[in-house]
Length: 439
Ligand SMILES: *Cc1c(COP(=O)(O)O)cnc(C)c1O
Image (cartoon, rainbow, N blue to C red; front, side, top):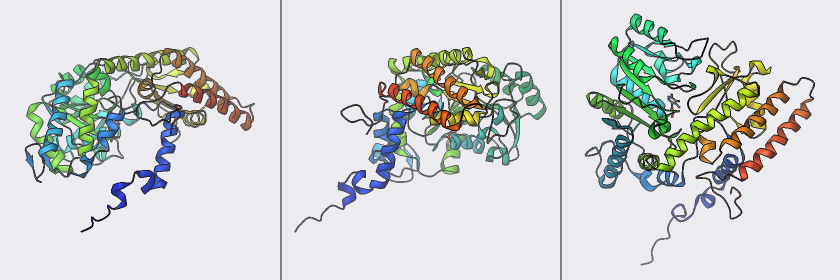
């Protein structure tokens, strides 16, 4: 009997099966090469991480946890998840680890579901002052279903206002006290948060989504010794696949695991789990430690170069991978600066600055960061060049004597220079042809 011909989807690659999607991915591959990517939550995952993410592990259902699954056939999946959990424990020193949350926001949601009831008081850094949506913002489920109390930073220096944190904690006695943020450029004093939270009986949660790569490498203090629960994404400075994880003290292990599954999720994304394991393997290397140190050094050098050129840095500088800039003194909004920079081949996001007088859709600030550009090998020379380009773009945008065409011309000039620099720094994970051009 003749064998059946294999269906085309098993024999052909993406370009043959779906040229439309393949073309979009190739264009994005080019964009990620050609532009300077300054969004501080983004990075370039390695080929190894991408390979694990896109592997046949995507085919498997595995509701439950290693050794306690609801489907058969878990011989290999249990090994992957256990390996991943062991590596997270080894790198961060956590007592218990759950690597199943689909991303950072679901990880935080699981903490609420595990450790408090709807209507309970919870506390976090306000969105407007650099907190994350999931730390109690009014538009998020964390603000809708819980009694969210929000603290902020001090107007004079942009640092967390611990007097306010302490006063609010005493007044509201929150069930959960979140620390960490998404646009906070300084070291987070986890010990101080733990002390304040524990004094009022709160469970203290550190969200290290942005800085987990820095923590893994020891260039930012770890919250693990101090707080009860740590949540993180895996795709930001940690340079893994898009995913989330939760670390906690052993006494919260059951509640956290039950909240993730069956509380919120069904089957874990096993390709992601494998890729997190790969990222953690990479994070234990000397190379990664040097990388994380360079991320912080680059941010400092870039911040100093920008300050010297008259950019106003929120909190006056940075201790980590990110910089928040108030564009008001340069005569433009953050929204205008972000749009102009993108036209010049430099990608960042517009962002509110603390005490911003402008609306969140068109705020005063931009937020930039160094994880992605450091992954492609940028160092101090490139940081100084970057500050010069940003200065040129801001100056042109603010100059009312310039015709629109002149501005377009200046942005195009910068874009060409950016492109030339990018060609000298191929990025991890992207696809290139034999001449070093992005495919
Ligand atoms: C990015 C981020 C998250 C959310 O992660 P997603 O993967 O986008 O859901 C949560 N907390 C903080 C502090 C973040 O920066």
